[in-house]
Image 1: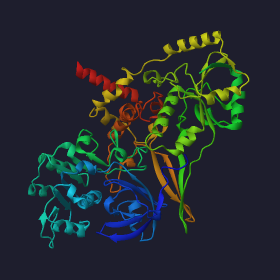
Image 2: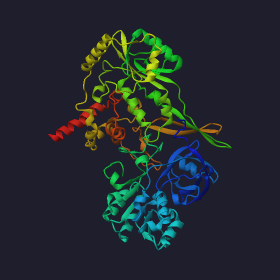
Image 3: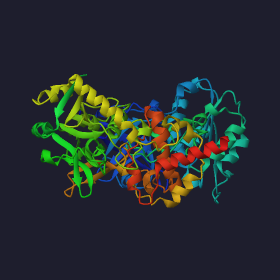
Image 4: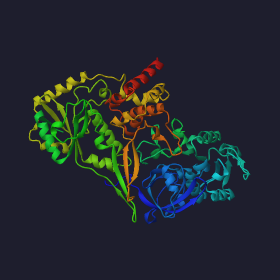
Length: 274
Length: 347
């Protein structure tokens, strides 16, 4: 064995699009246009030579790969800061895909309720678009999305598209309404009373800032959705992605191996999870 | 496998012979203590050492090692840096031997780690039976590591003027064959070995008040124990306990660019769950901020989490974390405190 688990592969940024003040969408092409072969909810380890490596969720759906994949990244730390300084054509390092993503096959035939907050839309979008591409396999598709301000909405075009579709129920909210905003004002939990779900036919999925989970979970559980039908994608510091380095450990679980997607049932008794 | 006998005077020539073909790491005096380091002279080997400051983990998982090189420029390319040389670790105590068995498992399961495995495959382990405790902090007897359970190529037991040598693997047998002075154990030798082994156990005291096998279940009841706050207040978060631990394998990965910008080198280095930034993400959120929570994490890894993942306890009873702690945090006392609380609740 001579191949290092930690040696990335060089990949090219084919497009860099600004999305908000803090987020950009990066389209990445592996050598020879080969497929990343990811499932929805998985992540890659992205590196910038000389700067370092960070785990980034894959935002594009496997059903729309076209030989590239997309990463929606907030400018936040060293690696993401350097990434934001790159232009299309630049090379980055990629390892992965890693982790346990969303079990889409177990969701077929069910109603699917998505409730991402802020940047939490990035990992969920990989599943949303796959569900929409295989629309006939699923029951109702409900998307509840909240951000702090309307300027922070990610994937605006797709949000508009989803809102316009007759077979998608899409509601959005902002924590603070500004002058140009005429929609719902309030945190994401204020959207839940606006929808009714059949709890036995519904799977619910959330991802967002650490503070959000507890409240969104209360809403989901309050609707009667069972604990093993609620999925969460969690964020942790990661240095290897392969269950060795110890950084992402959530009590006895490695987020990079058992997660980043967990059912609520899996983590409800894991105190460090939420 | 077979049992042989090697006169004590034959150890130095054996080690000298090995040094021709292998880098031989062995315990050597370092000021008032001992440390594993490559031998430059067989006479440096101190099989009478008590414990070493760092464990032989340093040999198999070096404190810093190169993983990969990203060559930049016109045609970027990535090179895996999997480097290993033939090595012998000579004189490994049985607690550290168990720790190597754990590392073997950690670095082989799921995603095999080529760096560790390549090094391990070229490493012979010569272990050493402990006949007396290293000091008052050893609790190997409690952790079931006072005798070897495989994992060695050769295993030595001091039987007076000679070592009884148990051959654990064919590689070990081949190594011993090179040694002209070794002879097969006689009935008398076997008797001496049995007498030595029988006499050693009373010299070791139990320090844990309960069976170590109960640790995972015991800790499951102790997540909210006041002990963690108490330890958190004392802990300096210096990371010494995890540095000296033979089973702490957590690491950091860093990329460093060369001055001429021609390449970026990826290295890993030992890391510690006791350090503030260990679980901190880029936006500043720290998933294990309190020192109390970090100490609890260490105790739980040693007594519960690693057991659940690998089927082996994460503590081998070497006592190094106790010896090194500036503020006298004692893992045995901690386990006993939790056990006492449970007894009191049960009463």
